[in-house]
Amino acid sequence: MSSGLFGWKVECAYDPDRQGLLDMSSDRPLPMLTRRAFSVTLLGAAAAPFVGRAFAQTASDIRSRIADMSQLHAILVQRGDEVIVAEAPRGPGLDRVANIKSCSKSIIGLLTGNAIADGAIPSVKATIGDIAPSIIPADATPGVEDLTIEDLVTLRAGLESTSGRNYGTWVNSDNWVSFALRRPMVASPGGRMIYSTGTTHILGAVLTVATGKSLLAQARAVLGQPLGIEIPAWTRDPQGYYFGGNQMAMTPRGMLRIATLMRDQGRFDGDQIIPANWIDQSTQAHTRSPYSGLAYGYGWFLSRSGFIIARGYGGQIIAAHPERGLAVAITSDPTSPARSGGYFGQLMDLLEGPVLSLA
Image (cartoon, rainbow, N blue to C red; front, side):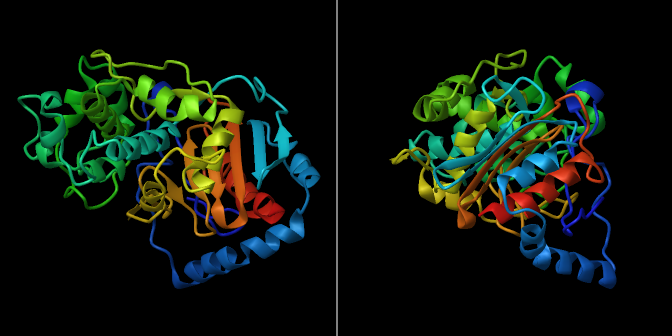
């Protein structure tokens, strides 16, 4: 793992769709810090806002900074109501859809909040057995019927991950939901975070059963139409469930609107799109990543400087900083890895330093 320029540990993702490896940076847990390393990390964290201001205070500084970031396709930064950075040095541009990879998990989190607000799901304490017993196979792992919505949206189902070495077998199975629900329990439900796209795919299936609408229909109705963003159809499993947690696509401008929604407590253009209390719960630390040490809420990573972050393989980012009034969207080459000691670390340094200094 790498702490990056400002002392932040960063997750990266091997592409599970291409390589069958972990969605995250590695299959090793976060190493223990020595007292000296811990002190240096804290010093870096405390100094980040000040160091950032010293390095970059204008949009042109960011343009210069990204010039040599060959994997970066597009970046948008909005401060208040003004878009102050809008650059697409490579790739398809700002107005064509891009695969947002595992940022999809954060979108599923927002759809979960909407389903609860609409009454389709009673609360985060409701279980799979209560809401969608039909998706549970006869030979499922004992206890999966008691998994709660909160267990799923915080990636604390306790089931063995379908990511990493299991990914290829999972997506080539004849029933993705059943495969995920047959994984052995390797932790207590509601305990530690286990990063697994299978967990969010189960959640997506639960949302589909509970609402009677596909994830595509929900995404378009809840986010696409109110925010005026294009959400094209994406990958479906053999049973027809849209992939819950990967492969969604949006334009960078659409991603920026999601970022402003998170920044503004679920509001957009004066309308409350997602309940404010769900945004509050989504941005509270419910668990912590064993890879980066970043806190994790209801589908969103949380940086110590105050960024709320959706992140996907290759360097796809939707980020908001409510305190500073910032919203950020970044797209990158979806075919290239973004390791913590390399490109993803550069992106986090960009966010925590130059971008944060613009506020």
